[in-house]
Length: 194
Image (cartoon, rainbow, N blue to C red; front, side, top):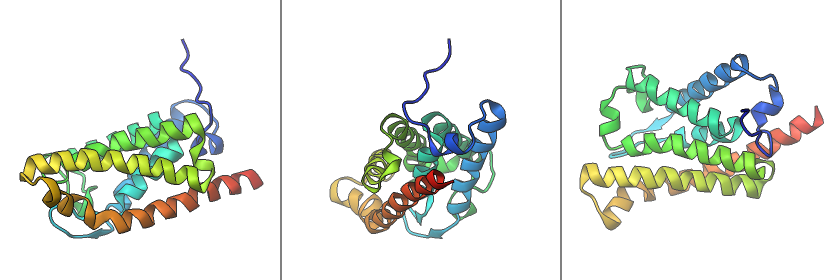
């Protein structure tokens, strides 16, 4: 039984149409490396630092699709769990998952999968509006997971929880969402002119 072909190819599948591990492994590892690289752009803030990780997570999900996007973020988290300095500020270790950012980290896998699924199902990455919608959905998943865990770890609730794990990130996330909404349709326009 062969897996169902997505309704719309991802950007990665369009640029690298060959099938199999020779395509998938480099894409998954490259996505994980990209997230690790941008995680180092950090503004330290307690309890959750401001980074470019969310932009990378959402772009990886959109570019690779739901399966490879989720695999890429799982690889990223596994690398950090075993001690590679891939998390914000070059940090690593299992303790990150038990700390204040653990929910956000786990949410990355779900967000990449959701964005990838939306792209494969509805081709949302072809327009600015569609890309913004997909990225907004992915961001909502990250926040839901992150805030749930942050509240559990810190005991914060209500407005205090939102002030610690949501409000400080809104402007930056809006800018990242806008950037992604320009990058992905721009990449598709470039692909169409090749």
